[in-house]
Length: 185
Length: 185
DNA sequence: TTCAAATGCCAACGCTTGTTGGCAACGATA
DNA sequence: TATCGTTGCCAACAAGCGTTGGCATTTGAA
Image (cartoon, rainbow over all chains, first blue to last red; front, side, top):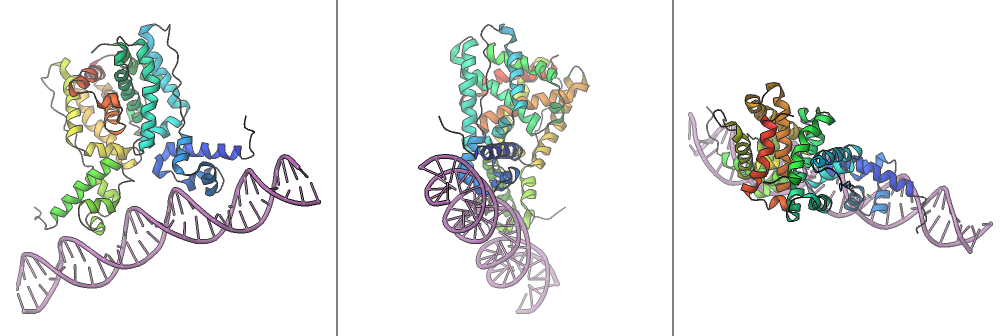
């Protein structure tokens, strides 16, 4: 049981600013100075509370996919449920965007991304796939489609992908994910 | 008709080194000094021949998807043909990898990626899609899957995606691309 | 009231970066 | 041979970066 510190508000402000900057600019273009300015504190405070830039990123990019429990869900609705859930997670929390932007050049961020999909999508695939041994492959394929969609929509901003509304996106992507999850090759 | 210059070999060496570094490290982590060292010349030569780092990248990331002519191809083989072609392009030329890594943080690279898919996949989709007006959307969806696959395989290196052999990758992805190209929602 | 810990800012360090200007060697042309 | 553009390197610049140490102020407990 740790008692709340007076600096908790500062720590939180730093973390929020860091998430925003990392999401918008990526790891190397987001500077400690800019993050500190956003949080209205001195850059040296960032160092005191988080040690260095890498550890700050590690703290700011803490993320959980919060995969839903799909037991009892009709098998043919799994794709729709999953795509809908992923879009929710992407749009409700910019941390995943920060993670994606950083993972392209930061090995530590890439490793976290690997753990995220292997550890959270993998088990879900193991539950519903015809052969549980294929679960990692199926999780990887789902990652390729959902990360690719996020890349095109939020990072590259391909106009036709940006302008897809939520329902159209689900209608297009759900059958793909459904097949990666339960279909046969 | 421009006559060949004595420095053409140097220019080519710089360009080759730049492609390699940009592909491996991304735009900001690839330094002019490192590129010059790889090319075994002085950093100032890079500036003389390419002006600045952005123009060097623009020259190094010149790329064409070389989309094949698919007229006369059986409609149901389009997905396979396309996926196979994309994998060839990815594996045969690291320029596309450099472009992807840079596009995540460099607006100019992102713009080039947008033009690449709108200008080269779009027209192909317009030929074979049920409704040509949907061509941009279909091209965007194909981009989301193929870029997502490349992201997971070459950049993030998700183990199950890396270990997919060529045939398995085509078998999984081709139906997806086929549906994005010719299927209905 | 006293005092030590916590909080915050300032100024500066050392390093790397992209970029520039000048100077020597070379090579083709006259 | 004399000349002039080309090719290349060296040294240095200004700017920005992550990071550090010291000093003032505030806070909460004794």
